[in-house]
Image (cartoon, rainbow, N blue to C red):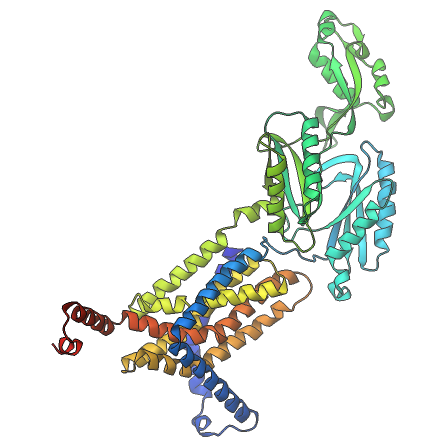
Length: 591
């Protein structure tokens, strides 16, 4: 996402710069007439000019106030920095916001070893209840497949729920997140089994569900039953945490199974090959691939398997025989011992270790970052040293990319500093531009916090954009202030004059950008939450960068200029030397 964003912005800026340097001057020569400068404004334009002149006078008064009370202004600037640190701590983090994708998934679980017909009856009943909801367009159900564990069995199912268009679901109660809770209550209210609905992941392919996914790894070689006990303890503790909800596992050791033990001593006594016993069992109760053959131009696979009625129960093993090396047929039931047990249907491995998959969602009002931190807190308290929690999917990506935004932000500041240093041929003036960036960051964080949006990837992309936008406003003031200093004005007078000259273009360009981004902040439909995240932060940052940072930039310019000016440095050295020698300052200056 960072690469896509950077390429888009870089190409757009390059094209914009080319147009501004070539086509724009030509258009100005063609469109701007001489009489335009002599025509007096009237009507709305006259009122607007007078109104803006009043705003400019207020702005200049604020600039002079900051120049006269620099210590107070610096205290306010330090408070802005502390406010940024505070907001970064209190605003919840996340990878990307959950979106109303226009569809939902609903998973069904029946008691282990339930028949497919029983599962079908349950899923049909719940599907009918879901289909009756006026917000549902259609529903398709597949029985015999567990999407969360990617396994096939007779007691699981999955439904793909298509919701009606976003235009017909304008109310908050009609959002996909709320409807998932409604459908989950429908599935959980049935005595035959359970069904729970969840949103599609915001980035398809990164995870199965819209929440978090991870594995509890068995690192000490414990049995499956011990892993199940630890997983249940972990889930019970996680459900007590206020930041977590719907925490569950796909791991189970309660599936009815048959354990078959082969009496190898008896098999050797009767001269029956061990591999022949396993082949007979596989061919009879499972399926055994034999070969392929071609018939009438088509290839057919030969698979050996008994009919269903001959492999229903372990008692059917009495009718199966295996041939010994001497050619005698030995009943298979005399060589094996069948025991009815329970065990795991599917054993997963993660990072080599046997593992139990856990998944869940953040509780309402909490972000994915807070949910991940809560899960890690529970893992540290419950799992001990024999087990460990590892993340997959979007949770893993969120942990992995935690510092990417900070690196992008820091390198963006470094690039601006180096470019401005080359432009002004000084190391001091770029600091004036850099000092204007915290105001934009604070505005973005404040707007995001007030709207209850997370600090996610889209918001961080907006912050990187704000570096350039905030720097642009400061550059407009600093550029003209440098020109005024070269004309002979003092740093204070040059700062005030530059602020007066550039205030109107700064406000107009910033407002044009702000209103251009406004549709992102108020949009609805597919991907609305992502647009809200990037739009809200950029609008808040631009407002403070335009109406607050521009008051401080002239003060920063005057302070930096006076501190690093060569003549001022020389004066300070002379004054210090005169004080050290005890001579009158005026005589020393004259010498």
